[in-house]
Every structure is written in C-alpha cells, then in structure tokens.
Amino acid sequence: MKQNKSDYAAIALFSGGLDSLLAVKWMQKAGYKVYPVYFLTPYMPIERALESARDNGLDLIIRDITTEHLKMMHDPNTSFGKNLNPCIDCHALMFRTAGAMLDELDAHYLISGEVLGQRPMSQRVNAMNQVGNLSGYRDLIIRPLCQKLLRETAPLREGWVDLDDMLDIHGRGRVRQLQLAEELGITRFPPPAGGCLLTDKNYTLRLQDLISHQQMDVENLELLKYGRHFRLDESVKLIIGRDERENGCLERISEGYTVLLAKDQMGPLGLLTGELTDPQIMTLALNIFWTYHPKAPQSGTINVRQGDKSKEHVGQKDKLELVKQYIISYD
Ligand code: SF4
Image (cartoon, rainbow, N blue to C red; front, side):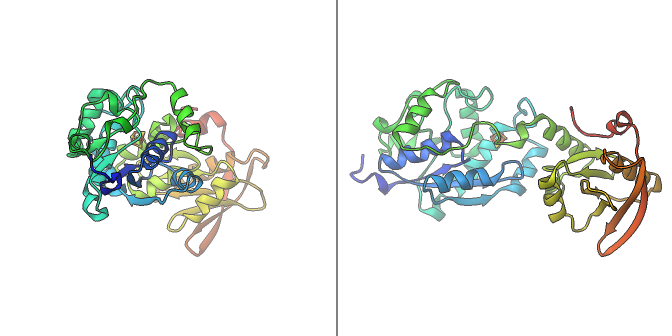
C-alpha cells in the first residue's frame, strides 16, 4: 500500500441514488480521490443526480452516452430485464466509457455503488463478472460497498486500495446503507424509485412502439417522457399533455411538430408527430384530442399550428372506449 491513498484516483459511476452516493463518499472519507461521473441517457432524469451531487458537495462530471446507448438498445449482448432495461449491457457501457476516461482524468481504476444481491438481474456475481468482461475493464473495477465479498482485482492486488477500506454489504435490505448514510452525514438523497424509465412498464410500452415503427431517435425519445401517446398510423402519433407541467414541456419542444390547442376552451396541448398526409388521420387526431376536453361541448374549434401558420378545424367527441384503442398504455 502506498503511503498516500490519493496517489491513485478512481472514476465513480454516479447515478445520484443512495448506493452510488455512499460509494463515493465512503471512498473519499477513507482518503481516496474519486471523480464521480454521471452518464447521461434519455432514460434517467439528470435532475436527480444533479440535486444529489449538489446536496452532498460533489463535483459531478457529466458524460452524454445517448448515441452509444441507443445503438446498444437495438442489439444488446445480454437479455432485457423485466421491462426494456438492458442492465448488464448498460452497466458495461458505463464502465467502458469510464474506462476510456481514465487517461483524461489521470485516474487509475473504476468504482460503482453496486451491492451484491441487491438487484436480481445485474447485481449477482455472474452478472457483475459479465458486466466487467463486456466493459473490457473487469480487472480495474472495485465495488467498495461489497468488495470484501468479491474477487480481488488490480486496485487491491497492486495496493492502490486497501482491503480494510472495503465493505461487505449484500442483499436487498437497505438497513446497512441507511446506517452508513448516517455515519457519513448524508441526510439528503433521492428515494430508490423514480430512476430509470426503462424499468417503467408504460414507458417501455411506448418505447417498444417507437422501435417497432423504426422511430427511435433522440427527438422521439424526448417526447416519450411526456403525455398520453396515441398511435394513429404507421407514421403518425398524437401526444396529449396530462397536466400543466407536461403541457409546458411539450410546448417547449414543439418546434417542427403540429400543435393542437382548443379555441375558447381550457385544456391540454396536443402534438402530432410523423408524416401527416391522410385527412382521415387528421380527423381522428382532432376527435381524440377533443375527447380529452371533458368540460367542452360535443364539438368545438381547434387551432392547428404548423410553424408560424395556424388553421382552425373542428373536433368531435368520441366514446372514450373507442379513443382508448389508440392509446399506448396499459392503464
Ligand atoms: S436500471 Fe436503467 S440505467 Fe440502470 S443499469 Fe438498468 S438500464 Fe441502465
């Protein structure tokens, strides 16, 4: 072991969740130099990580891996989890990207907040080994929260990291993590749920729809985060905001899309995506949109805006059961 632990720096995979936060803070408290890196994808809300880093005094580095993640989603090496979450490939991609940053940051090894046995898919020994192998950096990975239960890798073998500084947390419970948080003075961290959208069944249904219509790109993925989605034909989708926040988000990203807004009625914002050439599809969109104005009369006027041009159309309410056959949702 070298005298100065900070001679060898680590890059940490940081999601903002408690486990990755604990791994970083624990290593820092033990005297190691750690660079926490957040890997940006369309599926994880960055706000959670930013807030968690800010609340806990971490200088967060952000790397956008959207392009690589989209490519991987089309053809992962391993299978998806319960929904459309390719956790093993995803972790491997993050470790691989972190590994490629070692020289840039003058760092020597990689750490994560994984806990053995905590997640059925990606946190078993075999899965962790698979992640390591797929990443190409298996021998440089340390998992401080459970490393005492894992095989030795180069940072321990070479004496960059002391085994006595490693922990042996395992299983699905959170008691040890909460104790450790208290010990480290961590009082603010996000709840366990609310992380990755790829584990949300309605989101993944909408994602599957995009994939099967060859429409999975950055713009469509951004839209997927908001509103009710209706598949109208092979190309066209209607999106209707569910509340004020979603209407605002949709309005902000509406450039290039057809925007629907009821005239003289309070109500949601609608967006049409895709190639709209069939007038019957337009009528269907208008009627579905108008149906989501519960307090409006049976029919009414809708402003349809495309760029700086706006035209008035009439929408008619349909039966909700009819409308729901177009919605992409389990609810
Ligand atoms: S939960 Fe989402 S972000 Fe986390 S490893 Fe799985 S796919 Fe990746």
